[in-house]
Length: 575
Image 1: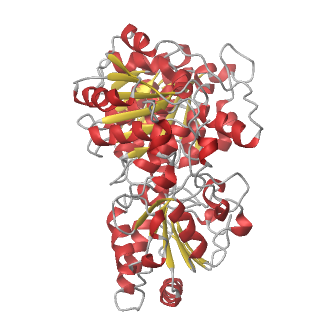
Image 2: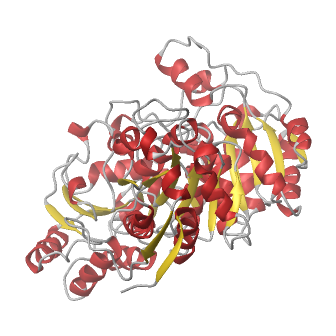
Image 3: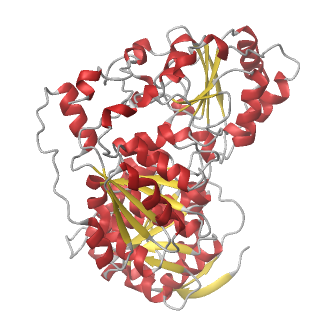
């Protein structure tokens, strides 16, 4: 039996957050959630007042990714709750554990179209791991305990807790639950794979001549960097990573061929077409990774390891399926491969002119922009050099996101924070806030585009208010860059509504009380970036980019990885 208390529902919410280790929350108050905010007043919880509820969800998401703990966001009913939906969908697609607390009109008003009433439980069902509507004050401790358990175990994901105002305002006697919740049909982690499945996996490794390790986001979630590295080195084979898997194996590891997929390195995609055993660790084989499924890894059997049984075989058939936590199952495999003949060092068979350290496959030749204009790749490299490759990099979505993935050498899980599955513009700044709160002593570099930044730039007020030392770099090319690139390549250069006017970002930052600078010429870039990184506190840098720069390589949508366009003809590049 746990501790019994008599308190208001709102007091139970605050005490429950503290009991679950959630001493940091991101939110925005409103009428239906006011009892909770009243209980927060003077409590030990650190609340960050965001300027939009979507920003609160993204900040909780960034906090969770950087810390490995469950993030928390709070919103009121109606529009406050609906504003969370994009952030919840983003966390759901990327398997990020957050708990969202929403106010709701009182239970007697449900279904009457009361002021700021919205069926947020129904609206969010497709984009949460689970949802609760607290119907009694005494239920709150158990609901919160289960919500945090579900959000942070198994395949992580967002959990919604809807709190009617009369429930949080009411007084009741309740008991605090102890130990792990017992939920019918739910297991924290699947049982270990059967011995015969592990034996089949080892036999597949033994039979392979060109095995390739594919590192996915599950390796980051599981913090399986030691096991991943030991496994790659035990096989002696090359490794590739998805966008979400970057950091699980150091980017400068000699076996690491870089990111694969639509904007991956040529050598990673070539290796995928040549492997005879693709070992997917914590991956879901989405379309940006596989290209045309009918032509994906055409010579390979698939050994698929994932914590979610529903993902195994969903997009590509698995020759061997191992269901479980990546870190735990890799430990079991490593114990078995020690005496097996599985070492396959076939990296020398791959083209030497496509190695990740060779800049040529990624973009324009340097001499094309000899007029001093700044490219996106040069901006990433300047940030990389100024931060010694050690920053937590948070990106928005678009060309700059891909350049960051290609050119920043991520060395550990949680160092690269980006919106993968949903591709949410506006994610970068609020997620960087969450990451900086989680890691106050680390350099957090937010790489964003002029389009993405304008979706959530109001969160500059949070950076300024709490004096968060986030370094914000705007890749400002005057376009929705990736949209413009697709219009150039696939829509006969019809640039329909992709050209953007932007305010003076330097003056805007200064209006928020944040120091700012601008880089317009290549010869100034390194010094401006270095000064921003070295300056204490928050800084914004407006980097004026080449407007027409494209992100290379690219696999056109619906094409095979072997159809990758490595670089454009020089004549096209010079336009």
